[in-house]
Image (cartoon, rainbow, N blue to C red; front, side, top):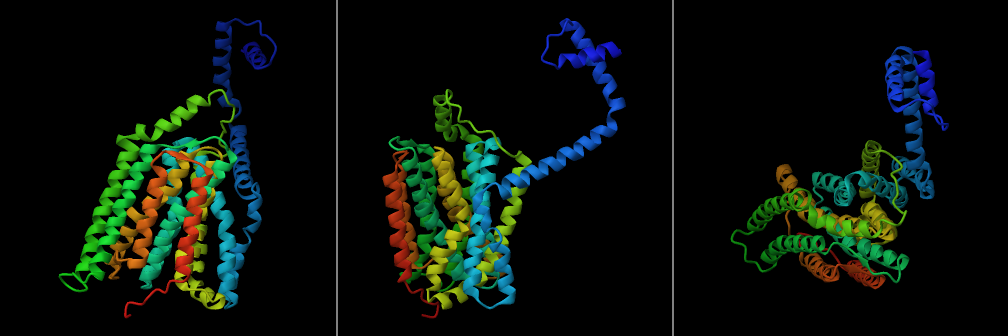
Amino acid sequence: MLELTSENIDLDSDEESPLTLSQSAVAKQSFQFEVPHTSVPKSKSQVLKKLQYTAFHSVNVVLFKAKINVLLPFGPLAVLLHYLTGRHGWVFFFSLLGITPLAERLGYATEQLACYTGNTVGGLLNATFGNATEMIISIYALKNGMIRVVQQSLLGSILSNMLLVLGCAFFTGGVVHYPKVQRFNQTAAIVSSGLLLMAVMGILLPAVLHFTHTEAHFGKSELALSRFSSCIMLVAYASYLFFQLKSHTNLYDSVDEERENNEEDSDEEEAPEITMWESIVWLTILTLWVSVLSGYLVDAIQGASDSWNMPVSFISVILLPIVGNAAEHASAIMFAMKDKLDITLGVAIGSSTQISMFVIPFCVVVGWIMGQPMDLNFQLFETATLFITVLVVAFMLQEGTSNYFKGVMLILCYLIVAASFFVHVDKSDDE
């Protein structure tokens, strides 16, 4: 028995062993039989050491590897300033700086998780975790009766994702891979564009009903239509998830499979640096901390508006969504630079689809439960802006290709929208 064990140990060395194949099998069986009786105490210590090493490695990779994490202390600093001083402008600014590295790490953790789940599910997870901030802010604002803040921040999230995030991703990807024409799944883009147009219809009709003064019951028909349309939109989004993840997954994987087949000779395939469960844990931790900082960010909006002499509508539609979409912004650019445009679209357009077809109707239903008159009437100016934006992006996506010029056009369109909201006065309900 001892001779077999020693010979089995020699099998692991680089030298050739005189044992035959059958003798080697017997040796391995005898070795495996005796190990549990002699090394149980050592196995426990080894497991503890392995767990400690894994935790240290995970913390080092996620928190200390990226240089942008030098901005992490600004998050706790913003919380301290909120309670120690009354300078809301500085609280808003430091919260913005504190969320920036968290958003980048959120995109990194999602990319690691996408290595295990695939591009389609990875893009959906990124959009979901990225929109968790908007959902928490919206519920917090609804509880305090801030309906216009909810509407404007969600509208700004859609505009930011479709114009700024997607534009920056197309631009950086086109510059990095110039003169190559980047391609993405055209079928997935068309389906997402159809859902966005459906969302525009759901938001447009209550506004048209309000401004044409054709309500059957003044003050009630508009709210009833919004709640009914919200329930229909939630059903449509659930059907879309089933279509995307279950019944027609081949439509979303076709472009990725072609790209993988074309890149079999290259050695650019990256192995994940952290495990799947570590990615899930970090996504949860980072999302919670981003949500906490977002709460202080919302509380400082009015004070920042007064101190900076800037309209609240501009902060709600432009500045606040940029912070809330920082995760999508960082990850979409990261994936575009790596020529993974399918994940980029899943992040940018998927996030816009999720906000318009899920988050907005969900807020209407939650407001219904809370007794708040949250509706889909986003006012005429905001609704027209959303409608034109969806049309522009739908035309950009219909070819299934991207380049830096498309990115430049989307970014310039966003600048026009930002300038429009800077000079736009949001009228109160009484006016």
